[in-house]
Image 1 (cartoon, rainbow, N blue to C red):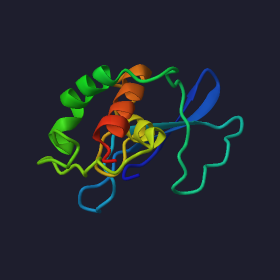
Image 2: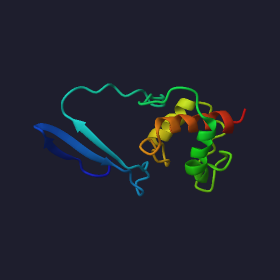
Image 3: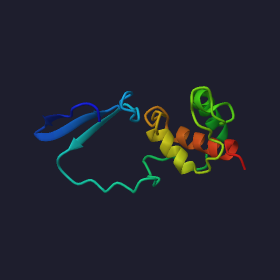
Amino acid sequence: MNAPATVFEYDGKPYVLALSAGNQYGGSARGDSLWLFGLEGKIEPVPPGGAVMTFAPAASGPPDLAGGKTVFDTACMFCHGEQGEGGHGGGPSLQAIKSAALVMQTVSEGRRDMPAFGATFTPAQIRDVAGYVTQKLATK
């Protein structure tokens, strides 16, 4: 975090709000997250580093690969290339990624220089693009 947190009260309950946006000059990951913490209750422990976390809501059923290609062509191709080989936008190759869960998590939450798309795409679109990346772009 590169900004001070703020504390406020709402309906008699205290909260802490912080902006997590990264710092270009400090070399930290960029993003645009707001973190809101309530001071009541309990939070579950964070999984160990490198673990794939599940998120909700997740779409059920098999991916629609044609729909996944549409999402990829619209939002991913510029950075990752037409065939997922890595593009002019600096995105890495996706051709070796075989884990749909990892793709869904990365698309939803972002990773390194990639922004989060969890608020942009529906759970079905995230499932579909993950299926397209792992089933059509990943080299066998």
